Image (cartoon, rainbow, N blue to C red; front, side, top):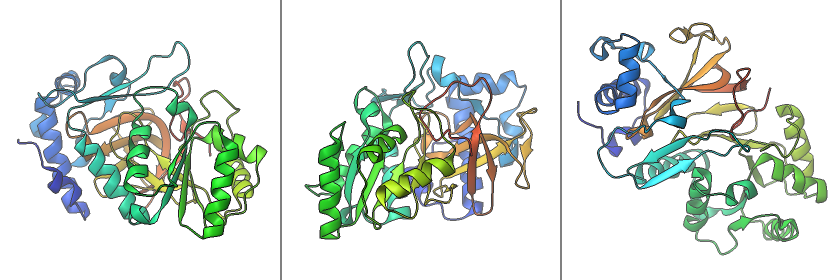
Length: 328
């Protein structure tokens, strides 16, 4: 089975196409990703017997902490690493072709928000800026650059400048997106009250050990009041993926067409949960064609119609990582 092209992945527009191409990617990775192939063999599964999405085995996300997970013989160009508290083993996602990531987040942004050129992008991501290897920073830097707007840019802890820029944006009635790590957004609204109803505020999750975790409703209510907006958008992504899902404030995430979330039984990881019941989140990310596209995460969630899903929290005793892990 040959590797699919970017055109074949990013042109997916219906369930039939997704299922067919996911199975093609599975067959390719079952042969070309040694870690995944060994995992499948350990389950006594013959890849040739897998003919439906529900039969695909999902690689536990922990493997990204200790193994080199690649499905390509090309040189590794970029290695993204997860954040973590002191002493925590972090994940590494080795990327042989960064254009897959660029095409994924650029296409997804356009799908959910329209042309990047019409936005001023303000990024409040201090904990990510303070370390190397963040895939979120890579994406934000690209969005800032592609906005082709001199007012777009990053903010560390210079909240005075951010407040001034937000007020400037509102007065000029410019379309603005503020993407921020949760603890920094909370720190900001404790010091400043902004009344900018047209502003899109997107939280990327994660307190990074800086603040007490909050339930989503409390968090979003606090941020809505602080920024003067009606809803808080969210991004669901992680180091081990090259795609993200987005929520427009309802707490319900929507996947781009080349990504799916499936829930598994928490007691039987090979059994799929349906009918809106809570389960462990499995992710199919077809942009991950050069590593592994089928990942079993520690997150808990529910699946709804039209490939929408809700994140409910995470398994007990699972280490905390920097994606949307708020208990809803």
